[in-house]
Image (cartoon, rainbow, N blue to C red; front, side):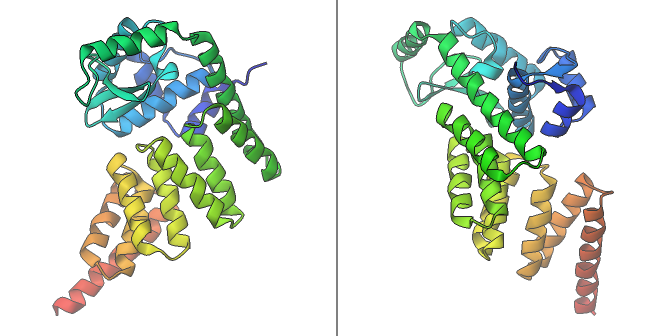
Length: 295
């Protein structure tokens, strides 16, 4: 029996608002649903990443329609293909190459014959077997999430995530979660290994860069931590926690103006939490110090 999540549980898991979910449904990017399985969650994760890259919904819809027409055997690009944003363009990773989702043109100066070869190769594959393997990987990934949520001993969640990675080595979510388990058990070497693998599996996965930054910060490597947080912010400019941690690092490095800028950015994104109270306090300290120096 496949795992199913209620609409509310899916929103909590993915940290997406009801308003945003309804918007995607209205734009026919996803079907309205009261419950979500693994495929639907994967589609929503892809949409979240594209939204963080500020790709317009209309462009997403056009790209999905184009991919269904151009790639035989593909019925749901959001779950069957690896999509990512490059600027405001949507690209798809296909047999080790990058392809523009709307035009179908291969990048890096490949000729049309190469595209035909790749599409023909895909048509000869067994799409059902590929989908089943992907679904199995998703099953083990979600199994790991459930085990963590239930407070089960970490070894069981570790086993589930490792099975997900065996089936899909590019499962950035499973790699990040493994890294976090090892981070929490203070095994920093293994945590770093999996965080780095996650950033390589999906360079546009902001959480992977952010968590790697947390690890570097914990180890006292402030320079590398800042690089990681800034990388996360480049991918997701409205990443509130990244602004918060960057502000702390700049403040500790006596770079007050940069710290003020990120404290202010954080407060625009999160004006009412308990962390916002701390941010206002630190911002007030910096402003007071600036006034004293001015005098």
